[in-house]
Image (cartoon, rainbow, N blue to C red; front, side, top):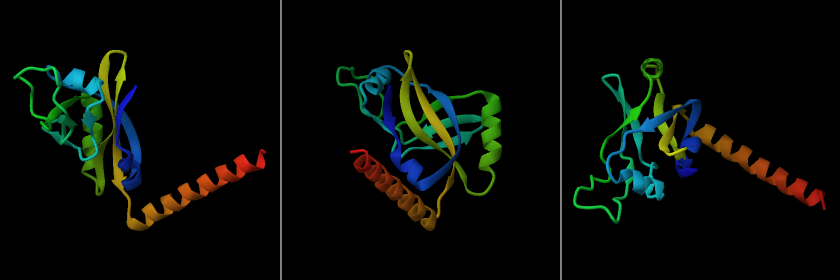
Length: 148
């Protein structure tokens, strides 16, 4: 079940590759995320000393939690294999590549995040993708009306 999605990512970036990563959550953060009180719109991912961290991921404190609730936008560690981290770290060193969060979801009882290796779009690329999207929408309308 998808809990949060970064819709802007597909508009601003070409997604080259995707990976599933676990998120290291503490205390009542798990309950808050499963309740859908999370946002990844402004978040980004950094590799620091062969460890992957997500910055600015907003998780609203659990309402029934206690005084020990953690800050909303703290740095959280992502759980990946060493080979995957090394592979993506070498890609990031190339010009224009970055790692962005795509979605947060539950898989069985665990909270997972889909991350993507992305390359930024230029303004003309964004216009072209919007134009293609509009054309596809128009074609669906025509097919729907033609079927009647």
